[in-house]
Image (cartoon, rainbow, N blue to C red; front, top):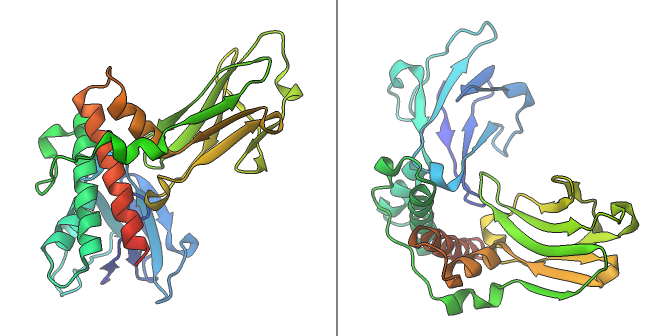
Length: 278
């Protein structure tokens, strides 16, 4: 079986395409049947494996199996057999190749560089594989004035709702949580909630706290604001993923590692926005 690779950096993920002749794929204990995988315009089955920003140097190990669970020998596109029939690939591999290949667009190279920088900052902040930081990564940088347009805004109030705020969840799929507390004498069903114009239902976190989640925010949309309205706008919160970054670099209690993540996130957004607007 000979396969090719593609990568689309809408979010930090590793995307691969495989021949339809393969029956299933095992990747880091995740098994996918080719018959269940979507096809691209070339008729190849596509398998996506998502990674968090701090996992950019992690190898994704892929093996192919036939219908009898027997390993199928695989080859690189130029012919040689893959050692031990196990192909390893990391986000860093793609970024390094993009940076070292002549003729690619400068926007793609900027995107690849920003991904490595953001990945290194995340590894340091989360103390994850800090001995395996990307070799071409650089320390991210930006000014607080760059992020000021993205700061959180909040207006109004609703009796019975307290401590309304928002936060960012950084895992393989970037998420925003709108958080609030419900006063004990009130019923959550007596309030109306909408997010970006759509009716939503809060998720209970513990006895009196709730959250509303905006998930799967791609890189080119990290600066897009999401609006939570309670009771038709009596209480309104506007927040983007970069609102978190602004707070991180302007809060005197933030450490350098968190500030680097925030700056890396902003640089990644700008690079992705430029690349996908080409």
